[in-house]
Image (cartoon, rainbow, N blue to C red; front, top):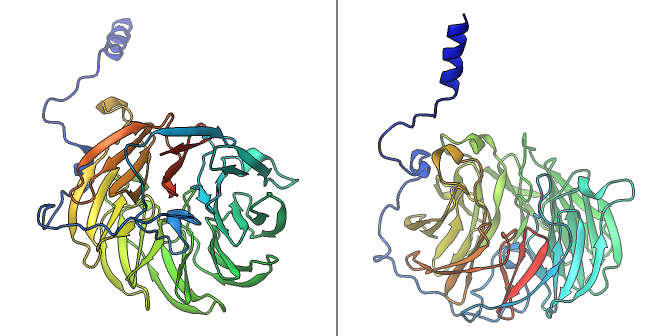
Length: 429
């Protein structure tokens, strides 16, 4: 008996034997295909003319989640960094991209505090949105939109709050019964999606609920998931079930509903159906996707599926020059033809923090892309702002940003702003 125990203990102390053979990128095993069809040399890209972005009012730039090609000059130098509140930790994270009305940049930290910063990096005001009966650390999540001199913030506590953009004074607060994603504002109505599967329309003036429309709730959702988008007379609601619904903006009458379904085999998160890529409205099409393995292009008028691709999508796609660009669940930057979905190129970014096979526990987070100054910008939790050629995906360069990124970049008046995990807003020009 003693001899058997000794042998067993000796076996426990032996080093793990790694099997010989070729090591393949796990993204290939997970079903991530190489670029198919025409290669980068065969598909030209002509970027739209850069324009001066005077504001960045919603996630991805506008209420349609589509922005113009922003003017930026390179190289980018660090201007300033300012603390805006609580950064990321194991249980809380920043989920809202910054927004700007052109003179102020607004942020939401990991503990439901909204801060306004001027373009010189000075804090103008800061307001804690935690309800009196709650604790700040219990309300991580939410998003921002700014319009008409008002800042609209959703929180992890289930509130939609309107603040004076100049002073931070609270104008009204409406309870939505569940945490909500980033809002969208059009005319005199602000729209939101709550995580219990409801679309909301509130009056900008006083927060009165104009109408509410039920969707299908999902079993689980992702913090910082997709918010509504404006498409002409319609508002597009994405739900955690994978459903996407179009309703008339003024009345809430349902126009069409479809489901973005599909998953990548071999990954544990494939079962999550939550829409993570906010609907992007461009050229009569709506681009929307989930994290588990499906990107789809829908006809804006009736929701008909025009094409789909087997990629999970982290954030809104960026349409420009007849193409769309996006980041996948496997940390890849991809270009596809907007009309057909044909893949042009696929550029792999670092995935695992510790690439060794036995150490693969944490992955890097990437944010973007944003087309600015003729280049695609991607902020990463490596602590880098990476730049790529939109024509062929070639890496152009990368600069340190001082800490791991926590948001996508935004561009206003030639300045790039982004949030980092240490709770700081950073500016580059």
